[in-house]
Image (cartoon, rainbow, N blue to C red; front, side):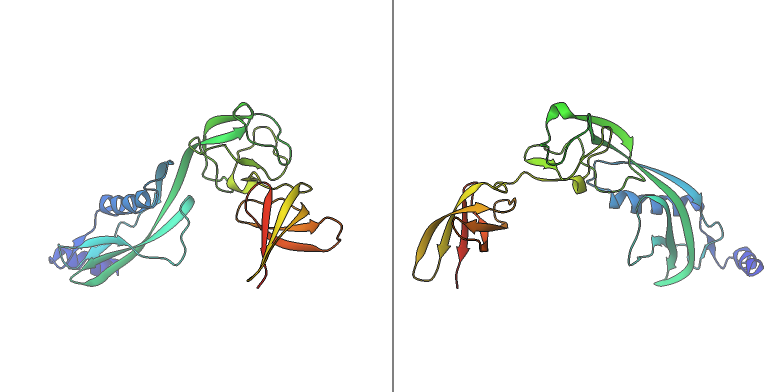
Amino acid sequence: MVLLIILWQMTGGGWKIPQADIERVVKQHIHCHYRGSLSDVNIEFRSVPGGLVARDRNYTVRVAALPAQAWSGAVSFPVEVVSRGRVDEKGMVSVRVRTFDTVLVAARQLGKHDNLAGADIRRERIETTELRGDPLTGHNALADLRTRRIVSAGSVLTKELVEQVPDVFQGSPVTLIVRGRNFRLTLDAVAREDGVKGGRVSVQRKGNNACVRATVLDQTTVEMVVQ
């Protein structure tokens, strides 16, 4: 096969694709994915095919689409050489993609359901290539966030470790509005779980053991609609 390609090139039958062209296309493909991201991206090429040939001098190199694609760490991209409307050659490019971000790090151990405050958080520039989860960056607002569980000092804060501070807290008294087609009742109740505005929580009427599901309207009011 190699001999055939060499003979084809010697007789003017094809154009060898420079590795620089392949690298340029793959770089553009990766940077396009990270466009709009705050991440700095470093691309190290591990393996680039050097024997791809186009039938016509007016060729293009493209990255073939994949159903699912990793974008950091050790990654392989299939590339195609296209000329005259057809795929002339295919190859595989291996790269290592490293990402770097300014992230939020716990300056001390944070307890479960601790509200995030500036004094408890510091910003650090780190490599995030192998980081699990979606990190909170230096541009994320800390307001209205709290921890889901205990977070060790020095740990990177990710979206999986935090949640919105509830508007209604478990055990807090609330006004339960029961609304029907032709009626509206206002009852005293107690929230049996935390909830945010627009979400649904379990509440218990005072003097009644039964719990019902209601929508949080604000910090003191929930509503149940009866069909």
